[in-house]
Image 1: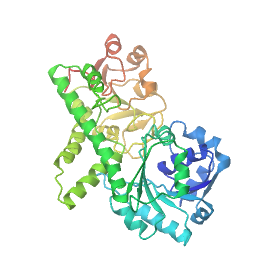
Image 2 (image 1 turned 120 degrees about the horizontal axis):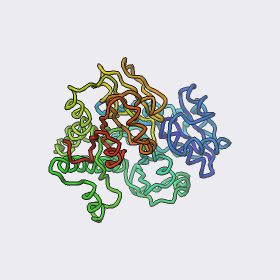
Image 3 (image 1 turned 180 degrees about the vertical axis):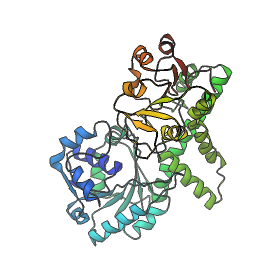
Image 4 (image 1 turned 90 degrees about the vertical axis):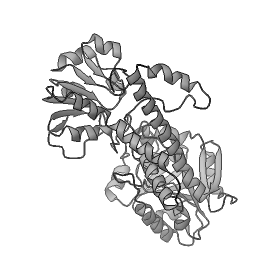
Length: 419
């Protein structure tokens, strides 16, 4: 079987790699010749396992800018990630453009097309028009776990023109390689299912952060509370119950923005969803509030460990670390992240190659991304390197007792001593 992927962003690279790993030939199409040249050697996004998988399947891959190469395929996915602005609003024009180019290239061919890019409810039907060989498939990748989730999905959600329509046999053959339950519904139901998933996740994140904040104030220990919640079958062992710095990465924020837009358009009561966005902003700024509390102290040199919005990804979309860097615009900052690169000009920020270089002489250390390598830092060595002893560690990367033993002052979302 030969499968095409039009759009070689994060989504296209991950799904094309796992398709090749399942033994199928693939065609990767992108309109950037520079990206295509690089993809012939390596993926351009950072994900655990992706580099190894990409190299191991190179013989099965064709990378090209020529969309007509899809005529050689049995099945084609439109797999371009949808960009969002700072408010989470989607720009779907790139998907519409790629779909138009693909349909023009395919002409009267009956090769099935599956749109995997996330669309606002109603868009798949508009893009597909009267082409009954077009399906919509919901992706539920997670940055840092994308390859694992693509290879071993919990379930697969497919939208058809009509929920009673049978999937094309070639699409169904591709799905069989991933051994997951398949839920078939109409286009609009599938599009809204994707949004619904992220809104439920947003509710869990928002509720956890709000309760953990109250726990810190009243002297309760959230680390004791969370296991009791996970034991409740209605909440479950995989619930988002770790306090954090709000929502980031772009995907959940996009679906909040989409729902709020649709709620206003169709006059649906949406205040509870709007509150998730306000909650996210409040919790994202927790580190900034800590900085405001200590603003009178000497912060001549600050170290920040972590730029990515979460570990195991290079993505900085809506990263809380970026908000902190902008807040510290008048302070000299040395920044370290194992993967992510600072791609905006901040005059007093220098990105360095190691955590030791970042922390040497610093008056304050802020750990913004809970990379596992930071948890292995020798706190005695850290204390000797620093010129001060203050540590802001929202995710509790460091052990509380070890921090105290090293003579460091520690502020964390897991501590009940700070707001």
